[in-house]
Image (cartoon, rainbow, N blue to C red):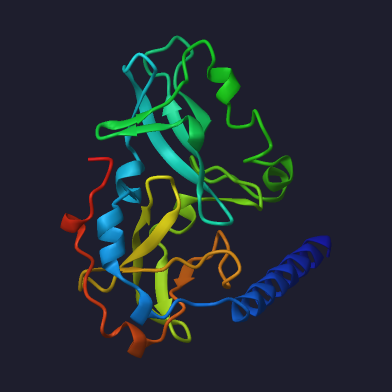
Length: 242
């Protein structure tokens, strides 16, 4: 009986949360696609999520020490930190570390972080509850190498590869990429629209009816609004990471 009751309570909580998020979305402003210009993004350049994920990680001696496993973002869609697997050459073995974004240095070959064999414990995933909270870990279950995060922080893998919909839940494609400015703010979300090519759109996360864990991401536009879009040209987008 207690199991059924817990399931009902959990289901009700999900419904209430979803309704609340949808209500919030109605109060938010949506950028008209007529005001959305690829040229600004091309000119600015930045960071491609597909290049950042799995990028090689180098230590302060410029020796390769691992790779990026995930990226943590804030509710206002800015990179907060990266999670990297490091230590293959160290006696401590492979370990995951969390490095604040302001301590990450990007160059065309990968990312450089100030983590060493001696200070790796200081960058432990759970060294600070600013990113990963005890409450979140107690309420949710870890899956594979994924890491649960606090309510104010979400993971890049929470949206990459998700279904993309338009209008009233009409399937449109899937989230193929995220574009970031050079200081880590989201410039746009790239959708592969049923293999017709990549299209970039403004990103609407928290407060627009979306939350981490949702399988579908709503573009906030109707079918007729996206019909005039041109494919996004990656050749014109200068990415910091090669």
